[in-house]
Amino acid sequence: MESQFGNPDVIVVGAGNAAACAALAAREHGASVIMLEAAPVEEAGGNSRYTAGAMRVVFNGPEDLKQIIPDLTEAEIASADFGSYTVDQFYDDMGRLTEYKTDPDLAEILITKSLETLIWMRKKGVKFQASFGRQAHKIDGKFKFFGGLACETWGGGEGIVELEHKAAIRDGIKIFYETPVIELLEGDDGIIGVKVRIGNKKVDIHSKAVILASGGFESNAEMRARYLGPNWDLAKVRGTRFNTGGGLNMALKVGAMAYGQWSGCHSVSWDMNAPPFGDLVVGDSYQKHSYPYGIMINARGERFVDEGADIRNYTYAKYGKVVLEQPSMFAWQVFDAKISPKLRDEYRIRQVTKVQANTIEELAEKLEGVDPKAFVETVKEFNDSVMTDVPLNLAVKDGRGTKGLEIPKSNWANTLDTPPYEAYGVTCGVTFTFGGVKISNHGQVENEAGKPIPGLYAAGEMVGGLFYYNYPGGTGLTSGAVFGKLAGDSAGKAVTQK
Image (cartoon, rainbow, N blue to C red):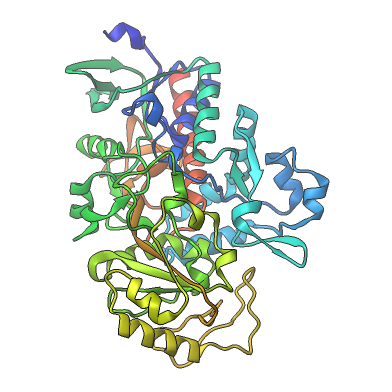
């Protein structure tokens, strides 16, 4: 049985974006590499397969973007205001959104290596495109990009996994599906391989290095309850059912240092009737991210958060937790006809929890689980508070807020006064967990004494210390690629120099 795996120099655990980047980078150094994936081929790729594909990257203008998107035309450049997203802006966002807890060394690697890593991915065959559909508003005939995001993978999550796996196979990297790793093998000089389960058999595979890139513990209800807290076991999972924390538990068992915010995760507003795990047919469209332009109501018929506190890219990953904390763990997003045509495409899918009415009173009776009288009063108070003398501009933080409310709305305050009215039911959807293991600046897993564990590396969601409380949209895929390549480079060099 072991012969089918050969005697690889490097074993990569996982087959998502971080894993593929690690495998491709290690192979560049001449190492023989295999990837071991717990999922069957049709579900392979971890959370990467379920993502919409946005990638946050430093760029100083369209010329930098053209290095990633070579077919970006002059006409497209002329029709858009891409702006720029500088190193300093990326640092500011990472600091501000994590309440300045992000590990400074990891943040520096992520930020300064972002552009060169995406250029490297493109050369490996990954395709990118400008995010016209999701990260730009058309103002006076010109697309204006906002929130630091201008680039996404072609074909979303399915596209990046397909192209990275093609690149791996082209480079002679074998991918073994339905081959979960259950244990790290230890020798006198560190990690010497892994134990896998194939059916009812357990098989040892020896190697010179192991790179763990098998995701966090977001699809493990028991670990969510243990680390994230009460009711998190009831949350829906946006992505794969295979990220059960196995890699993290294996690493901790061999003495890895737990690092980062184990009580934190990326979670969003997700359709209340979505399935318990991600659905590849619907993909990321169960998300509901136009909330900054409406109001969110809980079971008491009350607003509970400043929907317009910031651009969506900087609030969506923490507002899922706020929804989870509401009575019965749900909310309704409410819009009127002035805003409805501007809602993101995900509001128009067939699998959506939606009600519509021609009056607020009629809508109130249709909002399942909501106190109708309190809701009507909330809408009246909100409408009376809107600063209607300030122009509404969805492309920037417009300062059109409210006055006199206990919970203000800071931007994009829109009176709900134009029928028909629409409301969308949401709950909390978990994307990935923030807790992980400590790695060195070379991607090596460190033990509890702060020393590298020989032969062991980590990347992707396995890396702790980057994100706390929140995260800038599009940073997950970028960090997976950057730290995947870092781990692969380090492991590849180490095993070929022995």
